[in-house]
Amino acid sequence: MQIVGYDTGAADERSPALLVSDAGTLSRERLDSGTELSYTLGERHCAGTLGDDDHVACDRPDAPYCDAHTSTWVCARCTGTCLKDEMDCHEDHAVYLAAFAPTTFKVGVTREWRLDTRLREQGADRAAHLRTVTNGRVAREIESDLADRFPDRVRVPDKVATLHRDVDDDAWADALADFSPLDTFAFDYGLDLNARPVAETLASGTVVGTQGRILVLERAGTTYAVDMRDLVGYELRVGATDRSLQASLGTF
Image 1: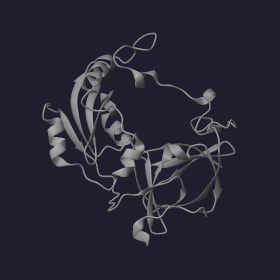
Image 2: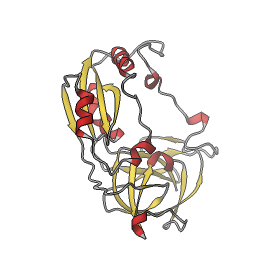
Image 3: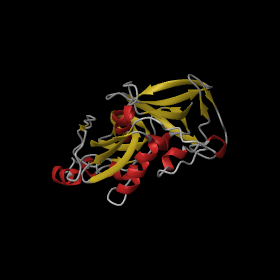
């Protein structure tokens, strides 16, 4: 068995899941709160390619994907100058500000109909829909103009470090002071953490929940935060890991 992908559950309101391939057959390892995972991570190599319900394996050592199975979405690097042969983002786009506790605020753009989904995929704690424009080029230009005030990306380790924190209300109000948002959002992922989780890469423990692509597990009295992308490509063996793991101070 190999972990070949993950689903945050944000797009279709299904349960978040790890996508697992067993001899080419694809299945979902659901990550509902309370689910018990009991796997040991083995060797890691390229995750290959996914079909609708099957998987084509690749044994190249690069992970999570080798050069042959790595694709670059040029729109993610767009700043208003189209990198494709012809601009094809001719639909309404939303420019948004996403808040990550306590005081990290990120500017971003997405197709307007995907706004709520995109925010949940990123694990945003709060957000504000700043503007709607007619195409992606204009949206990227606005994003670029705001990039001197707000970053356009937030690293997963930075999100993990503050999963137990709340958004600073005053700082969020200050960030929005120069805007008249069309809508605002507040998300509750049900983690209810009272201390910073330990960053780790593992697939055994009790699922606490997920926030974006971060999987939170409880094991032996310690709460762990796992970037699900870091699991992609690993072979799985049934049975909880016996590897020595860092424990939180609260377990002593």
